[in-house]
Image (tube, rainbow, N blue to C red):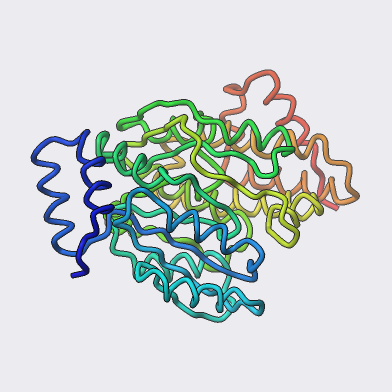
Length: 349
């Protein structure tokens, strides 16, 4: 086992301040078994211009007992060389090379190698505050949360209003009420990078990203994982800096092709409806799922003016009817009812 530095001992002491003696002994045993407190899983694909800032922010964490799992997903720029250079300077960095399989498969590969108590799936063009790991580890242990959600800043700051609102989180703790947390709590979705997961929780429920989904994979993973969680913690503290306007990123491409974006959204809801139905969730929480579906799809489709609008409305209508979600139409608010009526006007052909 690598010898602990003085800085690492100080970090551990900071973490222990909120723990009971018994919990501290568990962490001590974990440390002695060379188990990291945190696994940061970082898919990397052609982000050489931003990768150093990202890696520096991870390496500078005040909680030093972490592992940094970087998946080079077939990069054709200098990203791999940057990773190798950083690995020479920091033995906590692990590099996994694969052909370009997409973020979902890359995250699954990284998770298969993770050993930390908690897992963070980070984007490689973003960066984090130095206290992120120590603060989230401390709070997650304190509340014994399966999932911890925290706030973030958009970067650059002139982000769309919906994004700015979404990145604000209020502090709140949910126990045995995960559906309410998922559906009604601002910031629960759609970004998986601001969720911290207890690794054993993901293993116990055999949760993973769908490898053939390249847009909306975060949202799908959250609708699979949140219902299985017993304790979900929301923290208002902002610790993550999200680069939302990088050319070539999924967000950038989506905002420049709204028709394709909404088509992906409808596909994601279809995948989720099927998953929830197969796992007995739709029969129990159909009302909540329907309210979320109309809120998620309705406003965008109403304001959309593209030539394929009628096609998208029809796809959304077919989704509602296929899973008999319209049985809950009387549960909608006035605004949601308006969006629902608009969707149900969709016509084939």
